[in-house]
Image 1: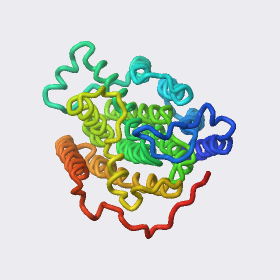
Image 2: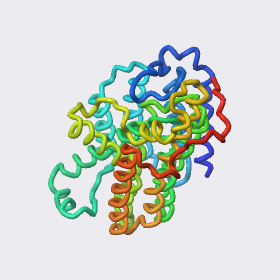
Image 3: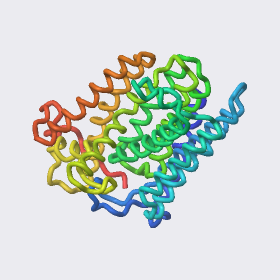
Image 4: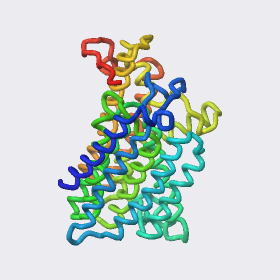
Amino acid sequence: MTLLFISFVAAFLATLVIVRSARSHARFSGDTDQSGPQKFHARVVPRIGGIGIACGVAAGMLYAMNLPGTDQYTKSVLCMAGFIAFSAGLIEDFTKRVTPRQRMLAMILAAAVALWLANAEIERTDIAGLDPLLGIAGVSVLLTLFAVAGVANSINIIDGFNGLASMCVAIMLAALAFVAHQVGDTLIFNCALIGLGAVLGFFALNYPFGLVFLGDGGAYFMGFWVAELSIMLVQRNDAVSPMFPLLLCVYPIFETVFTMYRRKIVRGHPMGQPDATHLHSLIYRRLMRWAVGKRDVSTLLRRNSMTSPYLWALCSLAAVPATLWWNDSHALQICIVLFCLSYLALYRAIVRFRTPRLLVRKGTSTAVLKSAG
């Protein structure tokens, strides 16, 4: 737990510095565009929270390097590859000029570095007909690069509200740490704890008041971290089903796949074109009915922060069974199918204004959060 504490404190302090010095760097780091279809905040907020997370991971890894029996080489490779993913997102946070294709290529490069130097490669999937293909030269490599880049991008996709993506990542890392502990994989256990502490250190200042945003740097870095630890956990431990990380990450993955289908097939728009019909956007607009039409800062802040717990619950609906049946591929496959069907049913219900009343917030009994800026 020392690793968890060190990474938490380092991330919290680094993020606090970013928040306290926001005025001095807001011109470069602030999210000043509040009019886009995916913008749900009411004031300029620094979107470089990924720096805090990176500092937390760096501090935790430096301490872990000195632990007896540690695999310094693999940890160094993970940090180096993670820095590539983080840098691509951070440059976008500062410049707003890095295209989605360029960011995707950076994620592929980061995955390639981890594969080449640490042999982090998908070697089995437990998917009928796919495993034999992995023996063909290059197939496993391509699948690995695609999977890592896809998961990293999916975390960025769900980063829409205060605490949403960071808590989902925290849930995933906690599950990875638990399973790694179950199979005695100290390397993955330590790396997962370090990532968990760093994310929670950021989360403490991101939720509920939104004092700082995760940004592309933080989202891509944490998505990469989850993807690589998932691949390595399965690769290093035959007892762990490859379906475990797939179910664990199914919420952001399916959100991304469904978004691509909705934009390209249903609407005929470019897949990278932003819109306001993500599941989390619909929950914000249609389940927080008490706030419809109100534009004051306090109401927008409260509405924003009350949206995220719905998605944390959704993420947990995948993470809990994944953690319970981490070594049972058949049970995990059934849960994946059930999750996807449940997601589609919920999305359809919200779109058609048939959401169960239990999920709709109409009252204003909770005290209004005061803006911290």
